[in-house]
Image (tube, rainbow, N blue to C red; front, side, top):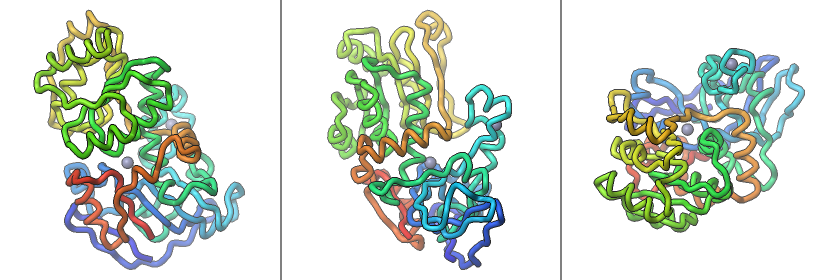
Length: 342
Ligand SMILES: [Zn+2]
Ligand SMILES: [Zn+2]
């Protein structure tokens, strides 16, 4: 089978390897499609661990099941979540599944950018989902990224009627727009600087799309006028520039919540004013990844059409061109979601 091995964004080599045999508790999946995530392009995060096989947004057909597997069979069309929680550790007991050590260490092997991969019995039991007939393999690759958006929306405690500011409208930002509208948010301001992304945000139904003022204080004043309130009840920062984080901190309503969703570099920092946080009772929070509850909700929203996969997938590549797909994702040049098709 062909397996893509990542060295850096420019250097991805396709190797030939034998197709793995599933053990009695495992599943062998023939990959049909796998999404390229921004996390697959972050060299500072990846190169220290390279060479490695990436791909955590896979969908495919079950090729073989071990004899202990009784909830799936050969031929099933599935999405497999790469991380699964143990469900019994201190973090799982409190519902913080993505903080579970088991969650962090579980992966499909060797990864989604491979013609076949092995999913463990844990994957099969906890977070492998049958794709309904109307959900294509390409659409199935969106389950994981959409689940991350849903994880953030659930953690923020979004309620119908909330006012929301969203910063950044890459593929994740556009999924935020679709989900927030679904969750009953009508007062939604989206901040974006790139022209083509501004167009996309409008296409996806964002009622207000603004280029943020360079001065966060001025922008906060404009938002207060727009919402006739002291700010946005919930703020989602889905852009990894540090200026977006600074802006987001200033947009929250009194009693509001700011969610840090994008991944800055480890050495980047922003100033924090505890007195402002204190007197305005601002909640600062963040979400990492998604759990097995989010993936089910994500698949439902894709199957119902409330989140449109067709509108989100902009580029398709064969496995040999994974480096091109990564560079396209980095370039922000009119690309939303890139997928590798097998
Ligand atoms: Zn991802
Ligand atoms: Zn756990």
